[in-house]
Amino acid sequence: MTRFIVTNQQEHQPTKYKEALASGLKDISKRMFGDELASPGVTWNVVPKGFGFTAGELSSSNIVLCAMPDSTEYGKRVEFMERINELWVRTTGIDANKLAIFTTSALL
Image (cartoon, rainbow, N blue to C red):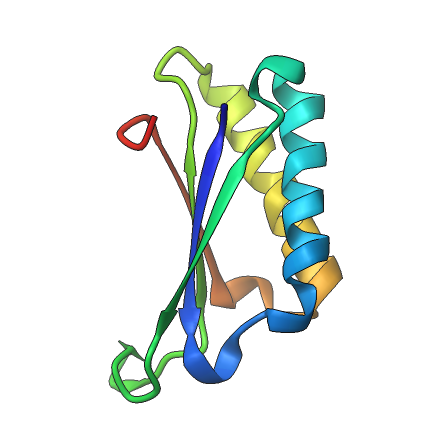
């Protein structure tokens, strides 16, 4: 199973998009990894206003951490992250430069 941890700033929460984003993450996981990994868990974390900064300014970034098996090939990881980026930008309207996506096997 893939797993996602989404962290964003309190005033920049994708609250009204959570259902669409979670559904999109599931669809991407299913297309990329099949049914075996297609039931992702999504944990939403919020950084309180005034507690997150980028370059000395209050941050408005979203961070998506994706857990996947170590055996996942580099090219597949890149495609997976590109699809998540496209989903986030299309769904929320966020600037792509305000989105950080990471993959790890540590959360499995």
